[in-house]
Image (cartoon, rainbow, N blue to C red):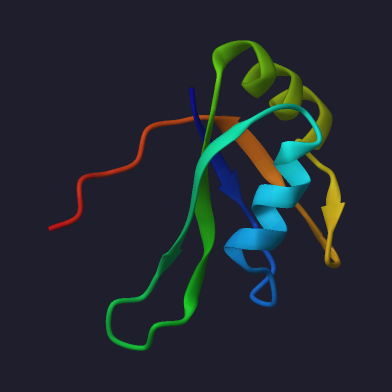
Length: 82
């Protein structure tokens, strides 16, 4: 299951996000989207987990305060990079 995570703190790393979601099950991958010119986080990303654990993580973490920002977590599909 591909999970969209929005409103990510600019201080957050992929490891931070992976550890947060790992509390609910095995995380396959974590990707925080970065601006291709500056390399700075765009404030959103994607986490891949199994469907069963992904749904639990979505329910638990949507609105969760992580590093001072309330995460927006929902099922999602990444856009193809151009």
